[in-house]
Length: 124
Image (cartoon, rainbow, N blue to C red):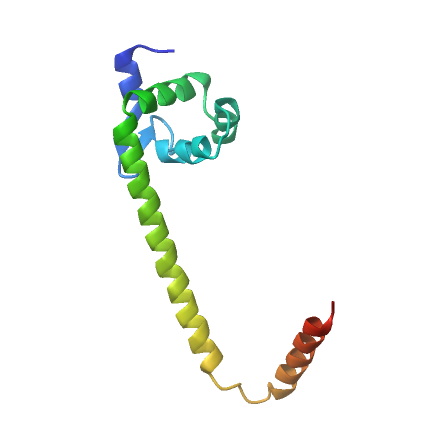
C-alpha cells in the first residue's frame, strides 16, 4: 500500500467523477460491485486493477465515505433519469411506427406475422 499523499493521487477527479488514476474506472463503478456484495479480489479482477490500485481506492472510499456515497447516489439518480428518458423516447418511437399504415405489398407478410403470433400465444 502507499502513503496518504500517494493515495490522494491514486484517485483523481475527472469529468467522469472520482476516477482511479491511470484508468477510466470510477469509484462509482467499484461501488456498484461493493453494494452488490462482491469481494474486493473479484472486483479487482473484474475491473483489471492492480492490488495497489484496489487497496488505495478502498482506503479512499473509507476515508471519504460520506462524500463518495453522496456522489454515488447522485450518479445513480442521474443514470436512472437518463434511462427513463430513453425508455420514454423508445416507447414514443415504437408507438409512432405502429401507427403507420402498412407499406403497399406487405399485406401478405403482415398476415403471416399475425398467424405466427396467434400460434405462439396458443402454444403452452
